[in-house]
Image (cartoon, rainbow, N blue to C red):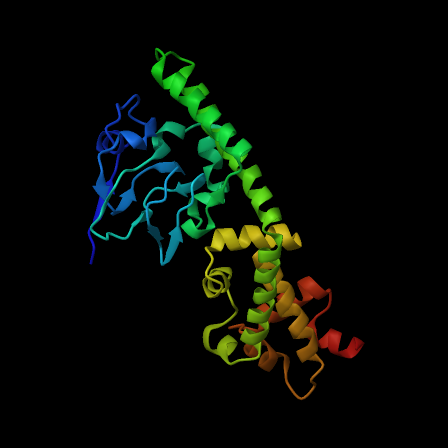
Length: 298
């Protein structure tokens, strides 16, 4: 198995790429200053936003590969493994990376809300592809952060640096919304596959064997990360992926309830509920009446 390099600190990452460590918890790293190196996999102990400007092979992330394009933003969260398959060849890194440690944002609004930026747990093949104008905005945010890092540190420095990181991430939320729209045909294809997946799931024995389908299970079947899948479904339908699954379960349940040859408990088990009372409670919550009352009404 190929060795994974642990990079725990901002200073370690900066030094590995021949950049001065301007702050122990945050830096803007010019990757073109790095020595030529072989492809490798790394485990980061901090947040990183990579703006890549060169094709450097097939990037491996999780169980997937992503063929880098120029002007692509890739986001990495602490503890995640990202890297390129080692083919033995040398390449010259090129691009810019914003790296910041969790300790930098503790006690700030960004620290409280960092979990809402779902793209830090997207797969690399779900990366953000920037237009030229979007790339300029990202560079502008990088420049403001670098300017603060190069200035004399004062009581305002941390606030301004963190605010600019937050601004950059908020732009990325907007750009991902744009990407969801421009990839609408692809997204609708995924929605169709999601529907087919659920139909196939409930027409099989899988509900009895493994229970109700989870968002993570559906995302895995569609080769997407759970967060990207959830965001995509929310943009397309206005409902969370979990709400969409629950809606589908209730639609199927209403059809099954018409079959008076089966008890409510049998229907519950067929749908994947471990306990019939949970099914009855959920049915009443979503439909307004209990399964037996729905049977009598119809």
